[in-house]
Amino acid sequence: DSGVTQTPKHLITATGQRVTLRCSPRSGDLSVYWYQQSLDQGLQFLIQYYNGEERAKGNILERFSAQQFPDLHSELNLSSLELGDSALYFCASSVDGRAFNEQFFGPGTRLTVL
Amino acid sequence: AQKVTQAQTEISVVEKEDVTLDCVYETRDTTYYLFWYKQPPSGELVFLIRRNSFDEQNEISGRYSWNFQKSTSSFNFTITASQVVDSAVYFCALSKPTGANSKLTFGKGITLSVRP
Image 1: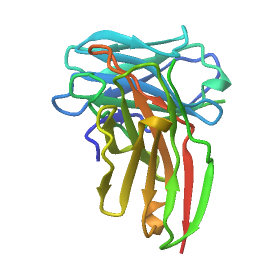
Image 2: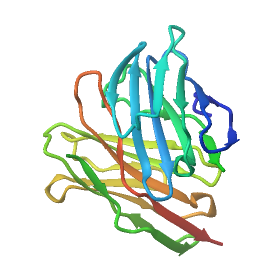
Image 3: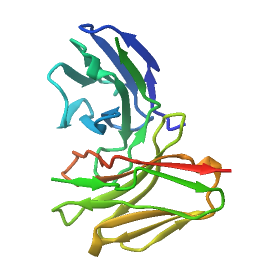
Image 4: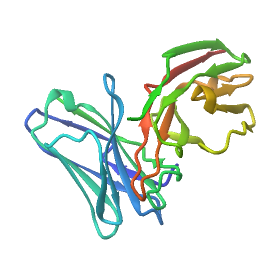
């Protein structure tokens, strides 16, 4: 158990809908990352937050947004969902967001868009 | 731009065989960090090792060992005397230091199957 929690574990929804994925980092970790894992794209970095501020952005679609709250939990919002958004979404956390610190991953949220 | 290549997509071995998983990376940075993660069938990503670009010492942890060679931009992972529990997808990843910003660039992963 990495100490990172993600809810829900599974999510099934329809095209055009909006969903919110939630992540709680390990106790004491200030930085949160979101990754998407799909069969065709592999593991792709989406976005990083550090102590409530956005720090780095990757291949995140405009339909997707995220934030980190004062209690350090984070939410990833996915809207106008398309079939291709079906994937496993991971949240990870690290102590301070610096590159040499390992990232600890949550169990993931499996999103299925029908 | 950073890139990680794991040319092997699937490897199948019989229990107790040794197996090496290859990882080749590309980066223009002189300082960077390399990682290996394991993704068992249950799906979570488990951190295995971190190596910084200035430390080319090989590392051994039980049945696992890592060979980092800057000259060939490779960071290979060897499992000695493989076991069925080693069956998983293994990812190599690269990170570069940019202040408090960081992201992992992952390879495509290698699916390792260890048969009894």
